[in-house]
Amino acid sequence: MDSLGLYIQVPFCASKCSFCNFSSRVARRDVYDRYCQALATELERLPEFYRASSIGENVLEIPVDSAYLGGGTPSLLESVRLEKLATAIQQRFQFGSKPEFTIEVTPGSADESFLQHIRRLGINRLSIGAQSFLDRELRSVGRLHSGEDTRALVRTARAQGFANISLDLIAGLPHQTEASWSESVQSLIALRPEHVSVYLFEIDEKSRLGSEVLKHGVHYHAGSLPDEDFVADAYDHARESLREAGYLQYEISNYALPGYESRHNRKYWQLQPYLGLGAGAHSCDGQSRWENVTAVEEYQSRLEHGQSPISERHRLTTKAQVEEFFFLGLRQTSGVNLAEAVDRWGGEHIARLTARIDSLEEHGWLERRDGRLCLADKALLLSNEIFQEFVSA
Image (cartoon, rainbow, N blue to C red):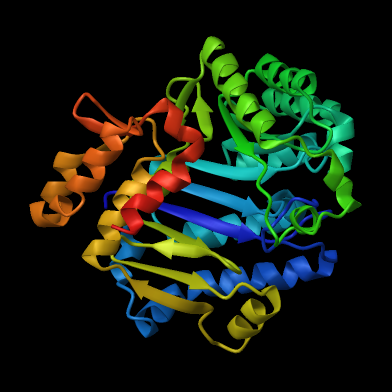
């Protein structure tokens, strides 16, 4: 526990995408001020909130080497609010010498002046939700930007000195074809971001589009979704194209130029400590997991009345820690180190998984590489099923 990650949740968007299952919403600008004040109060009173929930306050003393403003669309808060928030964060925590400080940005939501301002605040990494470079696909899911908006944002960010940019794509959007997916991948590569995330569209009843698909409806372009075989082929195409372009796949959905892997996201996969702030944010110190209330109104009301926003806390048993070590760690292409697991929890806790691991190896789902246990290539698209083997063991 030599470094700490911070995640700050900003659950507001300019519009709600039809595929979104996150707890974000469209809100008036006057709501932003109240929410930011609640965040400032949470930051100020974290020690007492942690004491009340029997969470070790020592986690607050760990130097921060990554901070991530996510959502939602944090850039909607605009420069002045973000400056106040950054100041409150820096007053509460000790930062290392060269922290990674990311903000999620939607194309069209950040102009030159905004980018200049956040650079001065210490934000040095942009995560841009491109999703697609085809305007028809973007409109079909309710995105307000165009492919050209994404290109313009990257050009402007480069001009303002941003040297660490991540772009996201989603495979399986309505109206997506082999040709359009290839065009999106090549358009992304042409922009040469340092980091790339390729997500697969998943049918989720909590999203409007997913719900429509499950009830065999026609709204939200539900009838225009490509099938599962297309999504699998799109994933393989992106992997190969990015590999040829010099990107290293370091996690199931994530690729980077050498040295630009997301420091913050790796904390999740490597059981490193991170703290979440804001409505619905999650935290983990290695021994416990806890989360804040999800509803924005309740989050704000609790803090305005001097109450803790923490809704649940779960102490991680040794069994739970070992399970997380495998189903989170195996997301990384570098896999997990079994010797490290034995040193950390003792051989008896790993031994109970030996038969399960041997069986998965025998069937070609897991393999050994340089003393580490890794997912085989053919298991990447079936990873959830593989991970379930460790949870149910």
